[in-house]
Image 1 (tube, one colour):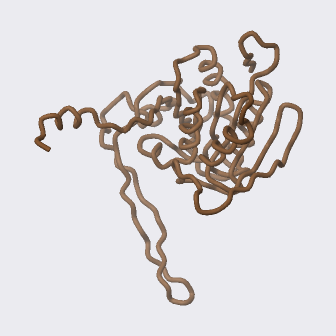
Image 2: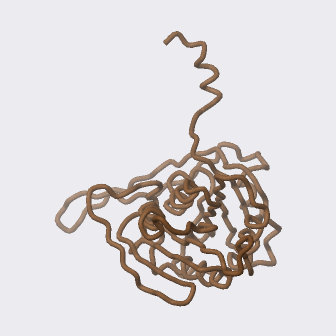
Image 3: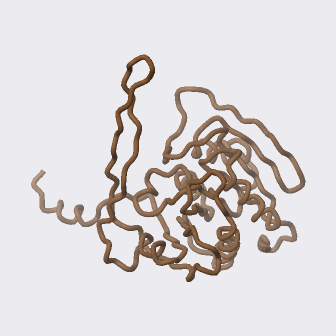
Length: 265
């Protein structure tokens, strides 16, 4: 895998983060995949930050510690959220200097398809990085296991990264990539698609601690609102495809906006 900066002989600067924490296997895999392609700057949370979405830390100080400094690889750990990691990298470590050519978040342990994109710390970081005018990609696999098999992801990540660099898309660009939990030979291909409309219905199991105090354990299930649609990320994943969804932050409901023009407010 080779990515060259335009009109430059040196490797490009690539930023990497995640939401599963500095010790996650998915982050380790992503570093291994991208290390031959560029100079890597890694800033990741010190612990798991799943479900943190676009949260930022405002009520306590952030810490930043460099834990690796090798040729073409600098790794920092931050005590904040995934978005904190992006902000402190771009606005402090890289302040006044070179911005990365690419930002990559992941590889997340677990799906970020459909409405999960709103809850995901992985995608929160990817979206934040796109604000700096560079292409960003969030990668996830459909396996929550701590020791998940990333062989299939390792096959498709370089292909998607190389395509983004080659195509030079208009900015901002943020891609939400989800990879089925299947061997490489069972994957049917890569599909660009849209986010599935749906929602989560949570279940809260009430338990008691040894002192008789109630606490609640969260679980739930995803309700697909368009099971028959064949152009969504959920359909693609269910049928053995890698899904690629371009995402944006404009949450305006333009259909309602048009209707509201007739309101007498």
